[in-house]
Image 1 (cartoon, rainbow, N blue to C red):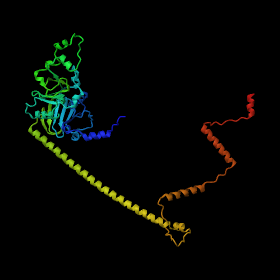
Image 2: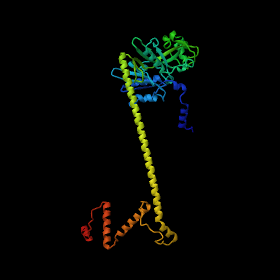
Image 3: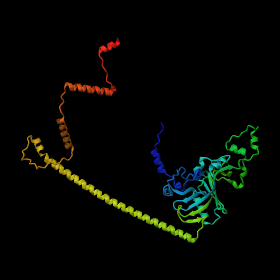
Length: 463
């Protein structure tokens, strides 16, 4: 018999262990959509969640009733640092990236996008497996360092901080299985997003030798000798792409075939998807509600910016004033409620005291009323009239059990006296028998009365 699993102890162990300090400090993200976006944008949302794994809410269900404030309120307790929101307008879909909980917010317009399933379906050999998504990807930024503009620096900082940082000293090459590429074009202002799987392959080895190294049994049915298979002039898979710039000497041993320390290998990347081409529209100071620091379409003068700031300050002051009024009303209601509670408690205490005094008074009256009965029970003789003088007042019934029993007894005796005595005669007995027969016919359903004929009539009919 196997041991039964104790779920409670396992849950307690999981809570006690919890996440490591490194996992808690790592950035966590939540990717959702808002409004009616369509089926393809929902699939794109799931693809972006796949890219952000393992530090993301992969199975989070998007509910229409959940507001932005709900996500902001739970961000601290679940260590959420970034919020991604996909929306759709009449012009095009948009992607908003928010730094929790104080901002900034970057709004991107999605010019083009391709889903992950479309990318992998075009590949001859797909390189996807679950172990790839157990560790976070490597972030590569291209052409972000050459520009000195503010919005470009904000974009590069946002993209870097969305993924965990890498410690080069403690880094293990086994954990680097994916990479994310952000390429910025200064002329058009667009950003190309790509997601790749990293693969290491040995160089300087023919395709035949590589098959044997990877423990694959070659097809030798058309050959006379294995030497023909080894000396055949064939290029390995993607050997034409293995330029000197793509080759490196491995500093650590990898789990793949031929991945030993000091061996020269080629780095290859296979695209996993999704693929996006997006453009920055605006940068806001807060979480989707703050001063616009940059806008690619709308340009405002300094006077207009100053007027917008004044209106925002007025809204903040009005909001603060309403909040204070609401808090004062809440405190006033609590005070009124406490006063009413005190009055109610005093009334309850006073009522209890009145009930107690009335009970004591009733007990005293019962003792006075029972003096004569007690004397008769103890002595066996009725007392003299002068011994217990009566006050002439009768105690009212308190509605107890004794009074109810007395009333019922009195009512029963009255009914018994009023009930007339039955005189059973021969006529009464006949009526009673007829009544019983009628009842029996009604029960059996035979309501027709039988006709009885004399015996002589039956004999005539027989003849």
